[in-house]
Length: 426
Image (cartoon, rainbow, N blue to C red; front, side, top):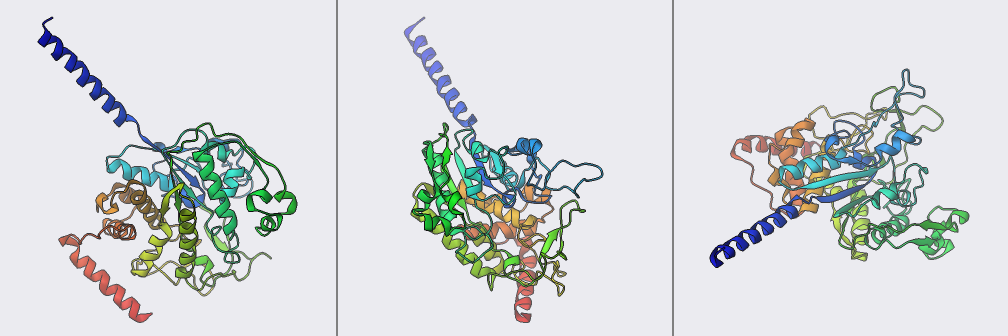
């Protein structure tokens, strides 16, 4: 072989090697885990099962073995204890996020570890039952990114919610950060974790529970480079607006709320005078936590995006209940970010959640998805509504809000006039 041919051959081999390495690098998806609860998995369809075939529901196998304490026990005919809803597999907000990343040309491998009403403490200590090894899901592999969603009202200051437990939120957000980044085995009591027995019992735990030894095995898949995001919860109309206590109707396929006429019923306890007041407290809790620990990559401001949509007049901000204390849906076509129970998100709220997460995690403008974004169409959200919600998420994340397309000017003007009329009436 001549020297020149040998050089060309060597160069070809080098180029192929480099191309192969580049192709291999491109083929490695970004792994992301969503840790949370029914706010994460969406609670009801069309969101709950959305895109489930393309994400990993890490609690589906647990539920198949032991569904106790969930709303997703196996269906039987006739139902032994009423209807069954929240059936696995779940796609939820992570499924919507996955669809968005696919459309953006990004390769994300999406998983979710979720359970009804799960708090970060419950996830970390596996307090539900022995079958649901939620902490084990987090340790099951090395993740590129992790999103932590706390129980809806747990990050609020003391006395500001039924489950308000700011000290516990702060402690277990940090516990997860250490577990994911460092992963060293631990043996501790919560008296030690909170600094004293008095501080521990102030969280609502008994002295016995405070002094119980908590043994946490090593996370063999800890990764110091994992980006961990805190997802800011949204304000809840059921904690703001007067109504009767409701309970899920187990004869319905989705557990739609009905007024609780048992001894546990009556007027609901209210904790805030406005959605904005609750949003402000949630904002402070999540952003203070992220500022106190450099191990967090940041906050996905979903709750702030909800409030922005309300403040802009795009979404309903009052009138969630009728005179009988039961939910009422707006008759004027107003967008409602909350589902019938006025705590979980509607399909619009879940879509806004996914948009805000998409922008926070990828760094891309949610408006880049466009009016014809596929997840919105699949969920039954109009192109105009999808575009408007993309603008809300974009504005919340600091992107410039795009000028409406010429064909939508008339619709935008009509919308602004309607908002103005509504504001005057209020």
